[in-house]
Image 1 (cartoon, rainbow, N blue to C red):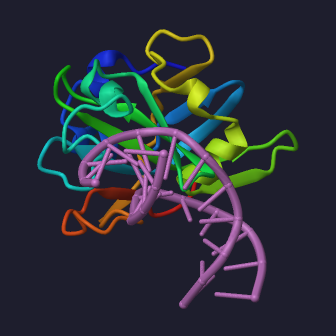
Image 2 (tube, chains in turn orange, brown, yellow):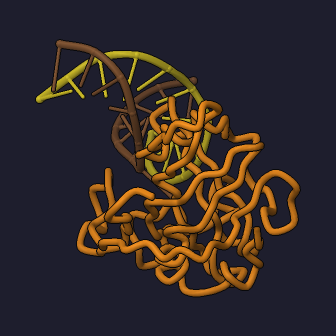
Length: 172
DNA sequence: ACCCCGATCGTA
DNA sequence: ACGATCGGGGTT
C-alpha cells in the first residue's frame, strides 16, 4: 500500500478531512478504512482546542503536518487526530470512524473516536508521533472512493454552524 | 491551590 | 437523560 506523504496533510484541513474518507489507517498491525472525520482549524474555530492560542497540550497542532495529536477526553477516552496545514497554523483532523476486519475476518465498525482508540490501543503515548515515516503507524492510499455526507460536528457546544464532519454513507 | 468542564460512551 | 472520571487551563 502506498503511504500518504506529508504533502497530503499540508493542505486545507477541510480538504484533508474529506480526502481521508476511504483511506486506510494502519496502527500496530491493524488496518482500518476511515469512515468518519472532523476538521478543527485555525483561530476562528471556537471548537478547536488551539483557537485561543498555544498551550502545552495544543503545541502539536501548531507544528508540522503529519503528526499525531492524541488527547484524553472526559477522563476516560482518547481521541486521535492528525495535524494538518503548515507549521504555525493550528489545525487537525479528528478520526471518528473506522471499518476493519478482526482476527476472525469479521467486519468491525468502530463508530466513535473513543471506541476506535480503545480498540486499537491508542493512548497519549501515541501523541506527537510523526506518522509520515513510521513503521507501524501511518495512513495508506486506496483506490476506492467513498461517498460521504457533511454535517455539523458532534459533541461540541460552539462552532455548530460549520459543516465540518464528514461521514461515509455506506460502510465498506 | 482550586475549580470548572470537555472533539465520549454505555446504560437507563 | 445521565453518570463515570481526570487532566488542562484559567482563576485566586
